[in-house]
Amino acid sequence: MRKDEQKESGRKKELFLCRKLFMVPQGRMTDKQRTMVAELSKQYKKTGRAFRIVQSLDDFYASTSMVEAQERLDKLCSWIRRCRLKPMKDAALTLRNHSKEILNYFHTRLTNAICEGINAMIQAAKRKARGFHTFEGYAAMIYLVAGKLKLDTPVLF
Image (tube, rainbow, N blue to C red; front, top):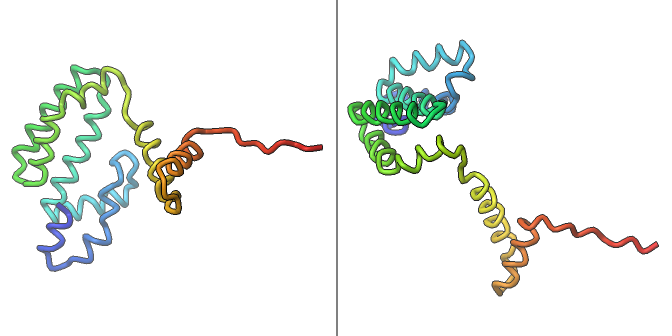
């Protein structure tokens, strides 16, 4: 939303320079940052509305039970659908389509963060293995990077 509103407004640089301000969670903002966000939200209504929606998504993930999370997700999706912002409506549809998987987090408290971390290491190994012409070389690089192998050199004396 910020990019779209930035293109529409005459003062493009202001929103561009403040783009990271909208990524700071409300709980970690200083008073000065809160004031700036409030002023920018008044000037750029769509960006301010999208920022408040993202903040409420953080509140959703702070839920303590599955029932509370279900209620918050329903309220959040309802709000997003009524907000008249096309990208946010698409996000609400995605949340609605994947609500079972999202709510499963509140049951198990497990995420796929470990898998994503391992995938990042494998992708790094893929970049490192550019000189290898076979899959065996690529596989060996994956084992070296992600396998946590202990490759101590032997002490000769």
